[in-house]
Image: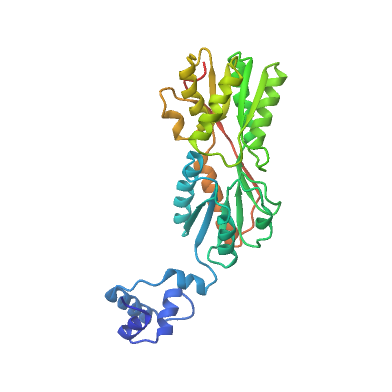
Amino acid sequence: MANIKDVAKRANVAPSTVSLVLNNTGYVSQKTREKVEEAMRELDYKPNELARNLSRNKTNIIGIIVPSLNHPFFSTFIRYAEKHLYQLGYKTMVCGTANRDRVEHEFLDLLRSQVMDGIIMGAHSLDVEDYKRVNRPLVAIDRYIDEKIPIVSSNHQKGGEMAALKLIDNNCKNVVHIKGASIVKTPAHQYHESFKELLEKNNINVFEVEMDVNCFDSQDFLKVARELFECYPNVDAIFGSDLAMLACLQQAREYGYNIPKQLKLIAYDGTYITSMSEKRLTSIVQPIEQLAIKAATTIVDLIEGKELKSSRIMLDVQLCEGETTL
């Protein structure tokens, strides 16, 4: 495999001149530049991109930290974020944190040691103090970390209200709400709060079932769904994440519920899995592609030293009508 000295010898220039051409720094005449570029083509020389970037204290690598790589929201987010970052000239390193104690610290160490230029953080970590101490580019996805760290999220308050209004229109009276762990500091709790508040204002009973921290496995949701139907036999509507609602749909069949006549279901996230069962789930859809693009654009702006217009980016949600409500 050819190296920089081979290119210099073929072009009859000094290795330092080849370096100037590769890094586009300093003055090199057009004639010399063409000789170097021709030598690189003839030798099929591929520069070491990482080494070049490290010499400039920049790697063009961005880390993405999420709770679970299998979760439909986060897997979709990663797909769009990776694609957009690549278009902006950056590679990605992805990390799933659920049930892995040290991995977040290791990723932050990579950021501190400049192996990465920045991190997009969406993990459900209970300890955010380490993030606050990192004086490097960070963007949070649905996580409250620090006022100086930009946060990208959906308009969760509106999402909760939209779901509540749909169940009010369906004349529901006994609603069970499956919510995420309240100990995690996230704007997503706003949809839980606005949902419950609006229903109770309309004299509708709301019963809450709270998941444990970092429960993203399908078996976790099936367990909660089974317990829900045992504890609330008079339930006529359920609201929760996509995976929770698919689990409830499966259990409802086993309990003999007629959906949507006897039981209404509304999912929150609106990922691709809402259309993968025998009934398409009515859902509040988060704009995952736009969230990913905003996060990618924001982290790159921070890395490149651009001033942000706002540290809080909030995108709208939509109601997608399915077959699990009337």
